[in-house]
Length: 122
Image 1 (cartoon, rainbow, N blue to C red):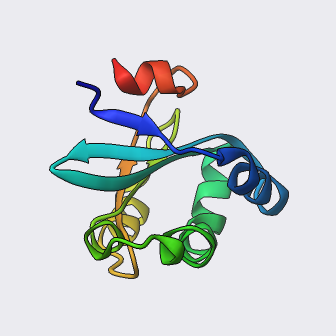
Image 2: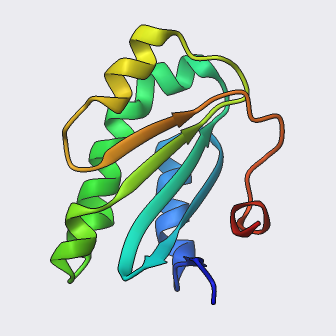
């Protein structure tokens, strides 16, 4: 059984995100764990962009994607993983991960390869 499944009709939301944010990669899907848990993996092009745009991205994904989910469990149990190829200073990581607006946020540092669905499934 698959634990991660990409969303259907993803091109529209991916295009909206790329239009609003200068990102390296984005993957939106569901972790199948009892019910669907929305997970968003975003990789900004650099650490400076992460620092400048993580709040704006969080608000955007909430308004354009998460609010449209019909399942309350999914709305209340959604995650954004901010992926970066470098180290994130402790104060910024703390600020992102402890922000209580809308989603749970996790910073994953020092990933040396681009993220894709194959990597996530493995």
